[in-house]
Image (tube, rainbow, N blue to C red; front, top):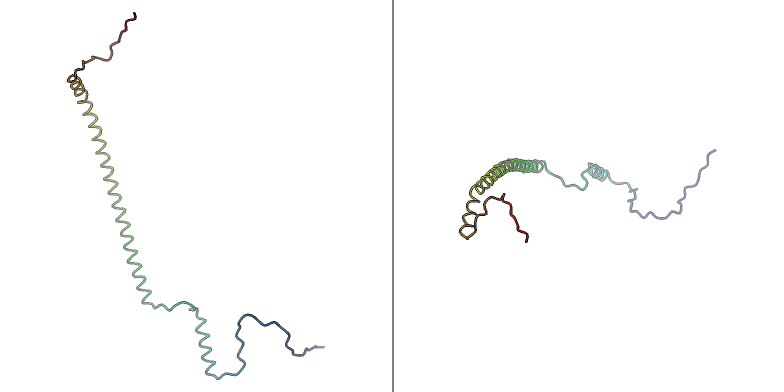
Length: 139
């Protein structure tokens, strides 16, 4: 046994979303074709993106390539200059160390004679060798 219910509209709250209702009226065949074309065009995935021409993409790739090549050339030139600067810095440090050693040697050779000469000019008397023992008389 089959039970059928009468076709009635139920009391339903209105839908708050704006959903277009299907067009029940028959439309001319040319409108259907136009609607199909629009639907087909929208489904290609280009929604929201501007159309970019291949020439612009190629031009952008070339510009990015030129800037990348210039950047890499700059990096390698900078590294080469850094190596040269470090080599010159090492050479300078060696030369400065040699200069300091030779100056110290020269000061040791010349220094005491100049000091004794200046002391004699000012009236000081040479104390002699340092190994002398000073004796103090106790009264």
